[in-house]
Length: 81
Image (cartoon, rainbow, N blue to C red; front, side, top):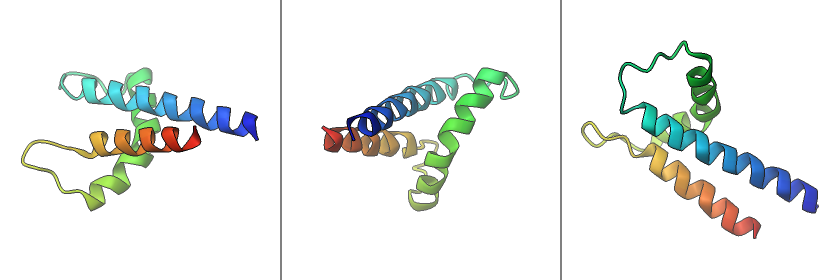
């Protein structure tokens, strides 16, 4: 059971880092999505952010879905202990 919890924690930490990276990449409109690293970040984060975008509308030009996703991931980390 501890091994499973450790694997889930590691996966969540990777997702948190990927969401932070995607947020920072959004500040640079010239970031090439065909770059393998950028494509990987988008592939990791899109399954989490897309369902949230369907629920949470954009506030003007601001997208708060990464913030909500991070809050949810940190909540899951806290619940895992």
